[in-house]
Image (cartoon, rainbow, N blue to C red; front, side, top):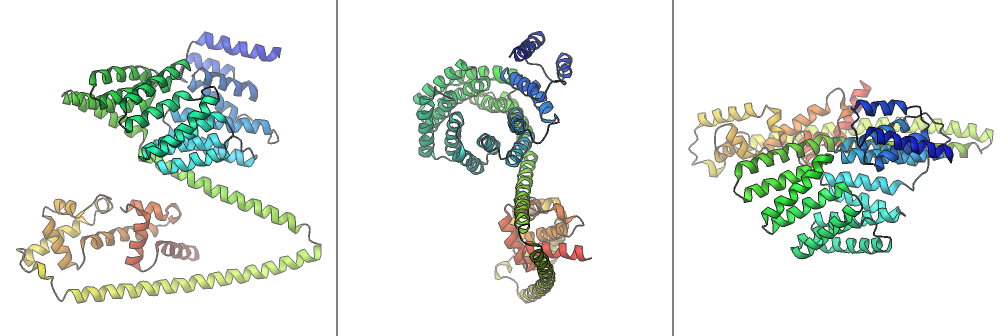
Amino acid sequence: MLRKGIFILLLFLTVAAHGQKRTPNSSQNNGVISNMQHLSAQQLFDTANYYLDKHCTDTALIFYNFFINKPVKNADVEHQKKMVEAYNKSAVIYYHLCDFRSAYEYLIRALFLGEEFNYHLYEPKIYTNIGNIYYRFNQYDIAKIYYSKALHSCQDTATIVILLNNLGTVEVENRNLDSASFYLEKSLQISKRNEKINLHTLLNTMAWVYQNKELYDSAFYYYKWSLEEARENEKIEKQAEILSNISKLYFDVNKTDSALFYINLSNNIAEKSHFLSIIAENYLTLSKIEEAKGRHKSALVHYKKYALLNDSIFKAENFGDINQLQRLYEVSKTNKQIEQLVVEQQMKEQQIRYQNIIQFIILCILLLVSVVLAYIYLQKRNLSKAYKKLFEKNIQIIELQDHSTKREPEKYKKSPLTDEMQEELLERILTLMEDNSIVCDPEFSLDKLAELVQSNHTYVSQVINTALKKNFRSFLNSYRIQEAQQLFSELDIAKYTIESVAYKVGFKSPSAFRSTFKETTGVSPNYYLNALREGKTTA
């Protein structure tokens, strides 16, 4: 007990000597950090928690990482449990710093470690934080899945209140206001029975519901109540968020001066604590306020700041990285399940007598050889059928094209385009279509093509229909499918998935890509890709 008291006193004196929150680049802070690297794992964990409670998130993050990287025996289960918590809390810090990729990576590590040591008590908090990341990227349906998954196994009252609130928030985003009210009312009942846990967050969401219902008096009431609770509990970020929401509400009721007053209060807190997402939203609100006051130049300046900050926080690459991490987690989880099944099977086999084991092994070898031979035979036969179907499909296309060249559509007989004009326009079109960056743009359209070749919608459509015997969509898709085949045929085909190629060549959904690919080539992209992989392996 005396040793723990001395340790806490040391922390207190350290913080007192170095003032309030410092950045990791501070020379004083570096001195504190270097002096504490000798601490035990438990002391590092306690130190990280101490700085987190004091809102020194940068220092807390460093100590969590010291703790995570501290060598420890695998048999120390309690340490492993704290590791899960350290990963989760580090992820929360990264989340508030808007480093969503790092946050997601740490949450996945927490899930892995929890599953490895059968520590499932902390999973609801991890799933909640994963849901929060998807919510930030407007993936509300995915966020709802994780919130519901967390709620299903959650036993912590405070987390249950937050989860019900988050489900209500998702329903507001999906415009299901009655469903949102149901979740929030249920959450409010639990909060009141448990010393008003997370009441400030819940009241803020309820105010938002009333704002969406245009019940502005009720919205003002709940926002101000929420602000009082946030101040009482010293929730700095929530105060900035609520003030921002009050500003938006005043703007909705055409009280721009009051809106400007509250947005400035919000910005004072957000800029001081570096709450980037709140700052971005405030720039957008300021832009609307300035526009309403007729100050268009000032509105444009604020909007540019919003767009720049918002793009840096929620750029598409971050979300792509998150999706990739999720896929890697699912694959690794499946592999672990397979490994576990293999171990169980081996344990069962050890119970069989020695003679039966030998017979079983021989039988398995024979069966495996038969399966491999059958698999090779079926794959080659299927590949042969696929190439045959592809050849027949191409022959049909050629026959249809030859047949269609014999007659010109009736509607183009009165067109002012001469043959020379059509040939010239066709040459410009075909030249332009060689540019993959244009063809694979998801927003590329007939009107865009007409603009780029300096013609009009009707003439471009006529040339494609008469000269190529295709409509614009089929014409465009043929180029996109060619580009997809090129990507599939590259040497390192393992780096491509069907979904990534679909988006890369301009399709807006993998399902549209699959149907178009099969219609064009005669085989599905799955089969085509597998055939290529087999061909490269056997080569």
